Length: 247
Ligand code: NDP
Image (cartoon, rainbow, N blue to C red; front, side):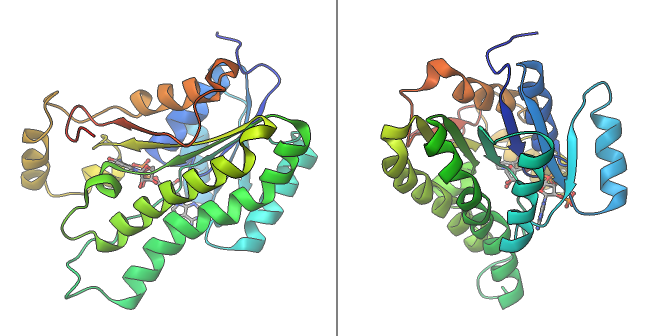
């Protein structure tokens, strides 16, 4: 076990999902105490199974709800300790062309992927700056960097996350707090496996590495950004996309 995050407390949203669970495991392997959220008892059970062998702290919370996030952070601070690391990983897609997109499809993607970053960060940032250490990492997407047809909602939300990253990074830079974006390409999780197989094959054909990414390949980037040695990296958008999009 690495120990660079020994004594740190981390919140990872979306820990019941593929990438979120991999991040929870990786940060715990580096010594952090890790809290995450769930929404349904069914998903909680699945996540507990996936996190077997780890002592994760699970709290019920909805990242689209500002007060729910406040209660989540307060509960973590009470039961686990002051929050040093926040990974905003919860997200959804509701793909369709703009001509067919409903107001609900727009709103749900914007509130889940983008409002959530405000809802969570707002409740941890003061404590981090007061204590002189913090890491906020926003999980965006290659499609926030390059746009993707059928994803005006998702691409807008994910690009917005990085705008948030750059602005907040400047606000807290002198207080030992870094804020960064990680932009994964296509990763083999439920979100991508829900895409029809023929479309998935077309996507893989566009990835120079020739395969989907693994959740652990995103988790290791997050872990790296959390380390004390990463203190000079802030406001960055780090791509992990198998070469699909090079900036
Ligand atoms: P999953 O669908 O496996 O996981 C998504 C997670 O977000 C789940 O834990 C889900 O909880 C949670 N979530 C969704 N809505 C809410 C909400 N309102 N409140 C709290 N939690 C919520 O997706 P991935 O693991 O693949 O994706 C994780 C992140 O990575 C997302 O932000 C996604 O946009 C991004 N990403 C993923 C890529 C991929 O190829 N997979 C590529 C690029 C970016 P629940 O189980 O309750 O629904």
